[in-house]
Image (cartoon, rainbow, N blue to C red):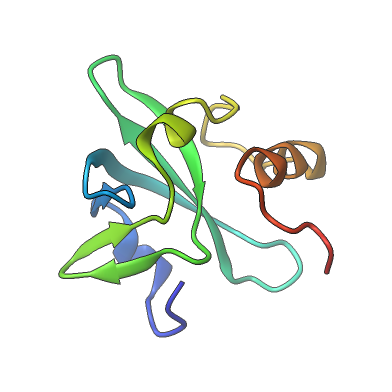
Length: 105
């Protein structure tokens, strides 16, 4: 994610997938425990409104929206951990694997 974006300003932004399909709206932003940098966005989606986690790296803010480099189906099928509480290291690992992200480092 762009380094100059304040994570508090992401709340309420519309989120779109890599092909431009709307996914929902940023509900919460989760920070990395070690660095304090924004790491995950909880996105409120769809008709049955559930929150899914999407990685903020390598997402970007474009024209007041958040663009994520993933397809809608991948995001829709992300593990459901609920929001409003801390993500455990095991939950984060599941999310990294789900999105095919490198967990080294």
